[in-house]
Length: 120
Image (cartoon, rainbow, N blue to C red; front, side, top):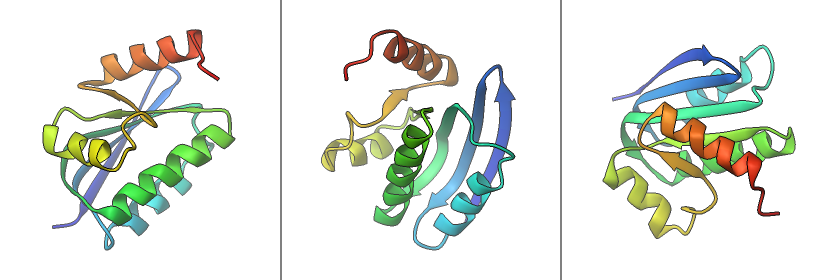
């Protein structure tokens, strides 16, 4: 199928929508789109609402993005309302590594809460 990406800016957040498949074939598209940002966003929200497939390569790309965001002292959240995609994070033990929500507002609120109450 492929991967389509859209980028929006809302306040201090950059929202990148992913539609299609994030797999071994489309990970380079995803990485190039993030690298093309003028500057690294301090708050990055990846909207996975229209993602239909996430394989191990795609999951690895998301973990890599999380690590780079944290290294830059930024925040990353995932909009992920579909159970079958969220289940991948649960099975792999990565559920607690990411901030999840069913929509952008929920992810933003969760990131605000995390910033106000850091666990580290």
